Image (cartoon, helix red, strand yellow):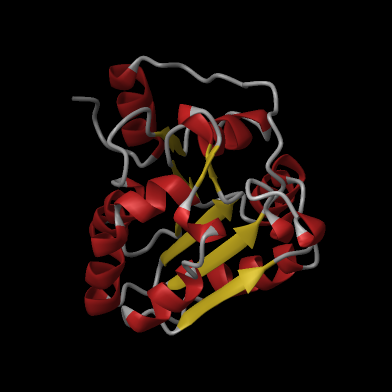
Length: 201
């Protein structure tokens, strides 16, 4: 096998199909997206006022989701990010494990590559098990998904609100067309605030 081939792709799912199916089951969730492909996937599934597209701040998606979950305990917060972005923010998983928010779920779309910088192999295709890392950080409901049936498992975990949830979803390393939402940060922020009944800033 060639050194740059990821053997996990034989059991990988279509990322856009998975995200669209998951969001259809969670229409009321507040969604934070990691930069790059997860943002394109969420936008391709349908733009919503309750989507907050994170265009930068690599490594900050999960911890931003934690802040939102603490500030909005009555809302279900869903972070959808990628393996490269989450690898840069591993410390955030420790903080989530310490805080134990019941309304926060983190879904990592893991293609084993750094998609935004040239598709170099990421650490998850070189041995790092993000679900195991999440469990070691105190997130008890952390698991891996590698088929479309996993959509139901993730949605059930999100809706159960029994503690923080972490799902590592093994997705194909496809180079999909970009679906680009607004890059106007002020617009995205104010639209999101208004969806929560808050005044724009």
